[in-house]
Every structure is written in structure tokens, then in C-alpha cells.
Image (cartoon, rainbow, N blue to C red):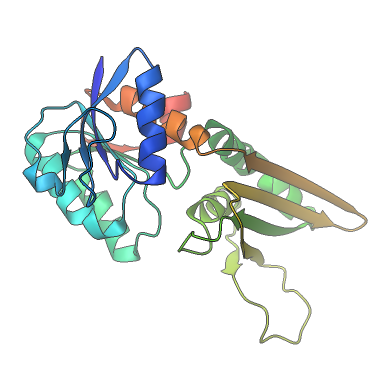
Length: 251
């Protein structure tokens, strides 16, 4: 059994993770962290992770970049592995996560779904074939109207996967409204759509001369992210310090 502390437990994703964990027989949520301390799921909820006195094997964080320092400090002090699912980290925060992985087992992914991470692997393996043959790469992501960061962490994850498969990296471009020129070769255009209740759609488009290949992933509910996070937590239990990814979970 893997005992989990869930940060952001009373948010939309936190509640979904709670439901997924409750239906599993190899994991359980033993405590939650949230500014809203309502006990909705039968486990104790603390307003700050610094106040949590419940022992656990792993922490899953689906909260906010604002609490990163406290989570990293708690993980180091208690020697508890961390599954970081929050997006919108700054460059400085990403450096802090990398540094913290020297003392703590950390798995960070902008998207916890199995499908997205398999797609990222495919993109890394095939990008050179497309770009080397003159194809342009564009990424279009769509999310619900309440999502604050843009582009999505997943769009950047997929763009990074493309670049990881190339001998020469491409630049990321988010806005072409000030341009009056043809599209340069050495770039990936990333566009964001916000509206309604879209859980998350991502299209990676390779546009060549007279043909277009599109890799699409559509999330129909938040459960796909919760299932991946719970799977990652079970994987990370007992792991030694270091930086892990969903690729390690998938094998």
C-alpha cells in the first residue's frame, strides 16, 4: 500500500485524484493540504504542509507554484518522494526543483496522462524525419476558460519532445501578430485556445508540401491526469534521490 499526502486536495484535480485513489486497492490518501480545509474525503486536511504530521510514502502536488518552496523543504526534511503535477513554474523554480532532486526523489511532469507521455516519446523518435524533410511544426492547445497559464505546460512538454529529437533546436514562437513576413524554418509555433470546459486538447501538426500529419490527444475528463499521478506515486515509493519522469513510470 502506498500512503499519499495530496497537496491541493480540495481543488478540481485534487478531488479527482481522491476519487481515483479511493477506487484503487494499492494506494490511499492519508492527508490533504489545501487553503480550504474542508474534510470532503475522510482524511485530515491541513492549510499548510508545514503543519502536516501524518506519515506518508509520497506527496502528490496539484496545487500552485506558490507553495513549491514549502513542499520541497518538507520532502527533504521528511525524506518523502514528490510527484509534482503543478504547471506554471518559473525558470527559477525549475532550477530549485532540479537542485532539490539531489536530496529527494522527484517526478515532475506538465501532464500526467499516459497517452500524452507516449505521444511525447513518439515525437522525439520521429521529429527528425519530419523536420529534416522540410515539414513545419505547429502546436495548438485548447483548455477550459479558467486555466491561468498559457501556453499549457503540456504544449511545452510536446515542443520539448520535438526538440529533443532534433540535431538543431527550433525556437518557440507564441505570437506572430507583429510580423509581416513568411514563416521562418527554425521555429515551432505554439497557439493557445481558452474557452468553456475543455479538459485539454493538443494537436502537434507537421505541415509539409501538399501533405499534413497531425498527432492529436484529447482528454475527455480530468481522470486521465489523476490516474497517471496515482500510478507515478506508486512507482516513486521508496525511490532514491533523483529526477524521474513519466517515461520511467511507463518503462
